[in-house]
Picture 1 (tube, rainbow, N blue to C red):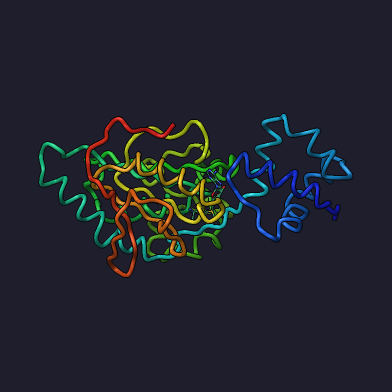
Picture 2: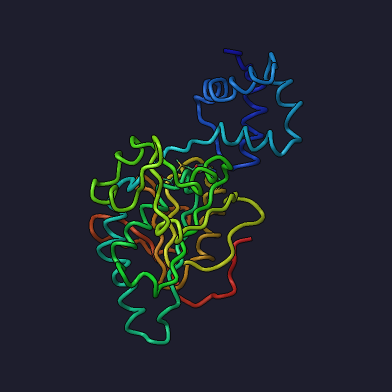
Length: 288
Ligand SMILES: C[S@@+](CC[C@H](N)C(=O)[O-])C[C@H]1O[C@@H](n2cnc3c(N)ncnc32)[C@H](O)[C@@H]1O
């Protein structure tokens, strides 16, 4: 493996931070060597400095480096409890309210999975919604928007192909049979789930992004990679995108304490979730 010098570590750490907000931790030298080493070998560079200066102006190179450096760990129904909360309380209450208000009925349901990686989180939500709405799903306009900075991750999410290992890690057998079809050695998410989804490449700290307001936002296991300033920026953006009665779910090891005072912490089904502190309507808000 090609060794990286301390100066090169700083060069790449600054570059990654300015493009993604990701702060590389103390294992950064090893992480850079192991994740970027194959790219150096493939392109014939013998050191990280030459590799950097030859590539950093190319958007394709930037995209590949970010893909390699960011951690895409995810799984279907990851951490289970937030999905139980959505399935047993939040979504049934939401659908019930909408149905009992004829004026609001058919407004639909808008969900944003920020930093969705390869899509398992999005399809887990789609399975829950399909189960809850059953045959009534056609009456609803459900969109689950999955965004991530990684082009490869978004591509895989959009395709909806997974190995049986990936599916069996989180999807119960009944749902596996109901919502996946076998395609060669892979399992493909069925069209009825894919129809609810929309995937976009998006930098959560960038200048352009998802427009709109959401009833539910999941932003799990990404803010842990950011510094405090960027966490604040991220949750400012999220606060501006959450509908007045909307619900925010973050990762099970994460907290908004000291990060944002826009939200009220609530707990149900042994799970923490957040709602807007000041539930005033702000329909002009958008992520930019
Ligand atoms: C560990 S995964 C979390 C996936 C999923 N939310 C979950 O909890 O299973 C973190 C994801 O954050 C994405 N990411 C990192 N920095 C980002 C940024 N600035 N904007 C958008 N996505 C980012 C990575 O590409 C990666 O796919």
